Length: 192
Image (cartoon, rainbow, N blue to C red; front, side, top):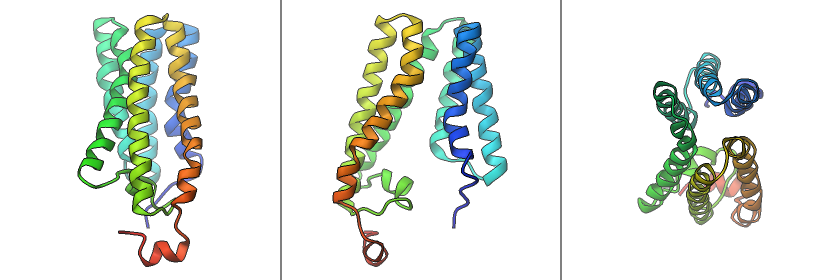
């Protein structure tokens, strides 16, 4: 059985860096906030590894993109790179999900299959919907950072992306319920 860690760990890893980024932005501006984001991301990954002795893929990929684009932002003193980071991350998630579907492997199933049992068609549809959603969020980020002020973009990054993602995930509950497998059905043959 995989070690999941204490209940506080996932929210700290998922939301700690963005909370620190926002607080640093409000007090010191985008460049300092970018450095704070990079440092906090490294700290929460190290903390996660210390607690559960493994690294989850999504936070690791996000940390790599934060490191590269945050580093370019600071090195070149150009905020364009940190503003492109959500586009890259959302685009990568979309591409990975579409790639998995092209290979006949809905990749949300290995990530969430232990938490929610669904039939294969449900995982395929959910993966497709999230792939489209992530692609749309990448496009939306591009539109916002290219047409709005930095203040508006930061609010979108901190509250808009998270809010839209939560709303979209909640909107998937009917699909997940329709394709849900009972415990005995999941154990007997839902793993196909």
